[in-house]
Image (tube, rainbow, N blue to C red):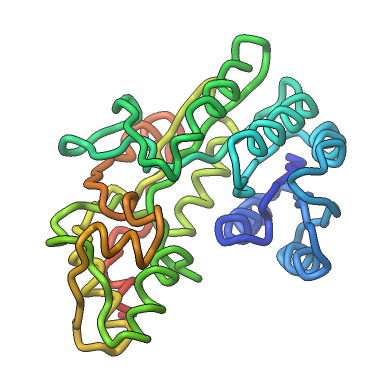
Length: 285
């Protein structure tokens, strides 16, 4: 299947291009810079020059494709909705996969699934009207699907490294918000890439949480990151206010207590996460 991808040179994008190519799909990927173009080309995709705000480029590329996967991270809801609209207009009745995230659910009461109520922290509150507009296309002949990944790990380990590993190395101890008994719904980068490939055959209007099914505590994750950093398990406790000052608004997302099951994607798509020991990966074992 000929697939057009936004965000192809990013963390999820590189893994997803690799998975698509392995499964025999041909890929065009949006590339804003020469460096991005070189990156997606090396992965086996054909670069399409432009940025997320180049709506005509998005529309034309989507119209050439048989499926679209929108992975690029917008800075505002308006930007994301404009891009999604251009892409969905272009792909028409072909599969359109849109990226959200589990943070929109807020704290969960034990293990939850896609039907959990929304209670997003401010950093992702803008997602709801975008996703509602995307999914509404199912009533107009479109094939929208929303993927809501959990907290990603593996490979470049982008967010965890940025806010935990790197500052932990600099300070000599990895941060942990509060007592760290809240849970993180982790998913390996290679598993989420496989979910995007599997979701190309999903029913219109489907929503899937992309999680590995293991939900370790934040404290366990901080200890594992500290081990990988050679800090002998050293962590430092931050209050939520201290974490906000150090990390910004993403601190409220890291402080969420979330547990999710991948049962829906397993049942409907046959997607089974291959990586089930995130703490060993985070610890560099």
